[in-house]
Picture 1 (cartoon, rainbow, N blue to C red):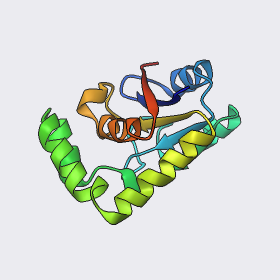
Picture 2: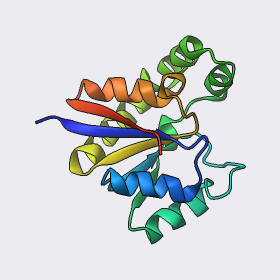
Picture 3: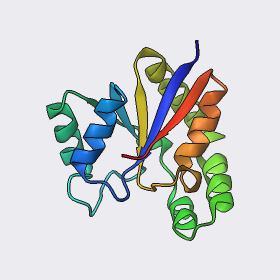
Picture 4: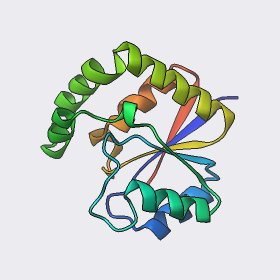
Length: 147
């Protein structure tokens, strides 16, 4: 039986809808893969997000080392998924530290249902798609949640 990795982008969501989607999918841990876990959207900065999730009985981990570098975030905002992917792989995943962080994420996701969180609603425009593809090589099936 394959393990399942979930992903979600909070673009267009409010914290309540995010929590409802996570609960419905029976997620145990939200893995925040933003390099900078701050947001102008109410409830999505690291402290508020963690508090709201814990109050709902959900775990939270900020995996900053798996976040997208600034140039990659700019490419994603410009709708250049190919450039974002290249930058992310070269500067994060294909480094020694990135490989270790990916292995740690795989171990977390093997223990309990984990959902990767970033901003972009469309997973094809987000580095969480690249992470999910890499984890598919570790035996994970991927399910994108949309809230």
